[in-house]
Length: 73
Image: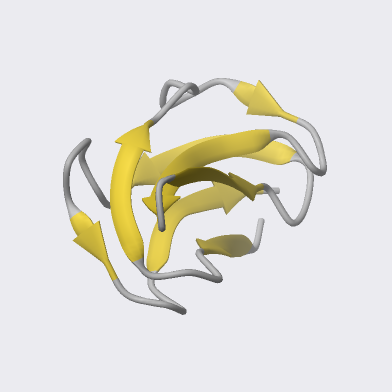
């Protein structure tokens, strides 16, 4: 099964990780929230699958284009 990378489109601070590893998720489900310019921006799953790993923690500062999680389809 191929792995799919969940990438953030904005730089900021990870403020929430609402999904646990091993949980089945759908295309478009929110995987993380990144705080940027006083707004919480959702980072959605680009495909359905199982959340294999989360590469960041709450309060981590992330860059635009950084991989936050891996989904196994």
